[in-house]
Each structure stands twice: as C-alpha cells, then as structure tokens.
Length: 298
Image (tube, rainbow, N blue to C red):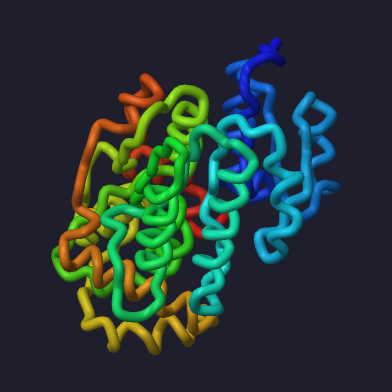
C-alpha cells in the first residue's frame, strides 16, 4: 500500500491520455498518496474508487488551484492542449506554477518539448520555453521532460499515406526520434516519484528515423507501397486544411515539420531507460503493434 506519510504525488490533467497513464503507472508501483486533478472530477470516479484523491482544477480559473495543490508534495504539470488562442496556454502554465509554489510544492515535473526555445510569435515551443523559465525562477525543484513527438501521432498520418501510397511532409531529410506516449507516461511517473534537484531530460525513442525511413517501415508492415514526398511548408498547408484539420493545428503540424527539417527533433538520448529501467519502444515495433490502425481498420 502507498505510504500515507510520503509527500503527495499530484498529477494535473489526469483525465487526459498522458495523465491517465501516469496515474495507472503510479498505482501499479503502489506509489503515493496520489492526487489527480482535472476539470471534471466526475470523469475520474474510477480512479477515486481505487484510492486516488481526485480534485477539481481549472487552469483558466486560478482560484481553483490552491485547493487542488493543497498540502504541497510533488507535482506533475502536464502541459495543456490550449493551442487555438495565442498566449492562453502560457498564462495557464504560469498560473499553475505560481499556485504550486504558494502551496509549498517541493518539486515540479513538467512535460515540455524537445529543443524548447523562444520564437518571435506565440508558438508551441515558445509556450514551453517560457513555462520552463517560470519554473526556473521559482523556489521549487524541477525536472523538465522534453518529450519528442509521440509515435502515436503517426497513426493519424500514416493510414492515409498507406491508402494513397504517398506520405507528404515538410521535414525534408530531417530526422525525428519518435517516442510512444506510454514511454513518456512511464518516464513521467518515474520522475514524479524520485527526481531531485533541477535537471532536463530529453525524452526520445531509441533512434531518429527520417520520413523516408518511416514510409519504408509503413510499406513493409502494410505490404503496400508508400513513398515520402518532401514539400515546402506552404505547399503542405492546403492538403492539411483539406483534411479538415483546424487552422491552428495546421500551424502546429507545419511548425513541427520545420523544426524537424532544422534538426531540432533528431536528438536521441537514453533518458527513458535511465528513468524507468526499460528501453523505449522503437517506432517500427510500435507500428507493428498497431498494424490494424495503420491499415485503417480496427
């Protein structure tokens, strides 16, 4: 059973895909006590039944955060998905950092992005960079988990590529060390339990394939020809828009490709294994495990 005298392990965004997996890993390790925060506590009734303390927290309403983080302990700050309105996500994160410090949180684990850096306009990388700066300026210990792009996102792009025979990207010959969401969750749970001091981990897969190699992997697994075609960023935009992707997400996806083309996504580190004791899942193995989704069937 979890040691109730240990500091609380607080997981924000526990209703999301990543947060839910983190809580499951903590429960499996009998770590805790665990506090799961979410906008809609009713959605986590099953976790409450398993002994998790569920609290309401709305990052758009900072007044809800002191009670959510009450008692201090260690906190996993999962970056929010508010990307449509420039500046909104950064404001949410800054409010959470301030509330955590006020609540006496001793250590914050933050899910950032690989090669976080400031940009002239609001962007995904810019939000992460300035959130890191807010944590660095706080009195708390921190761990930045700079997650590379989820391998899981390939299951959105590759079925169309398999069906049509063509994978269009704006990555050029750039490489990307895809990492599974499960490996990110496992690393986050491990860091939340034991990370100390102030440290940055680049959370990556075991290799950084190019999109030519991704297309070849998809072809091998599906048994259908798939070729990668590298486009200029603006030439990719109409196709993404035609697929029904919201304009702000089109911008995010193109930014990801541009940063990959510039080499920001190619870093490979042993951080997942260092934190968890398990090597990360190779992208080819992940796609084999999800062959039905790759083929567009379930």
